[in-house]
Figure (tube, rainbow, N blue to C red):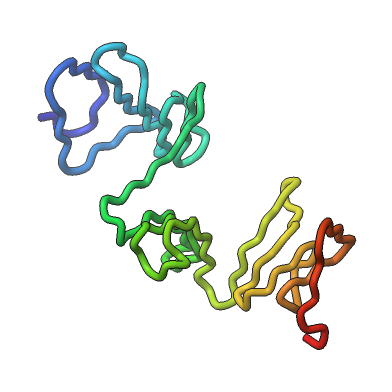
Length: 171
């Protein structure tokens, strides 16, 4: 047990470390390694967490030479996994994977993007900050427009190959 300001490197080759209470690390890092190769696997540097990197550039920075992946897993088919986005304490939206027995049949095994606000939209942006497509909270889809006025609102040219049907021209 150590109290006060910790100013040394500690190497523990076996066993566990339990830290309770508050600890302060300034201009330093905490390095968690595996016990066999002593390669860094998780770094905490100035409040930023690096997995696979010793110099995290964001709050969470994951780096790998192969395909880095993030996994959420649920153990019941009637559940789902979710990543939520908040502004302060207000949920803005999220991405969720729906289980094979969750909700209604048309939602099962889906990946869903959710805008939580009644006025929020889901947008698709390319080329840094150029919006290309939007789905509004009313369900309107706009391509080439940020304010679609109908179910499908396309600004610009469209190309159709194959059959094209208009079911009700008055709407």
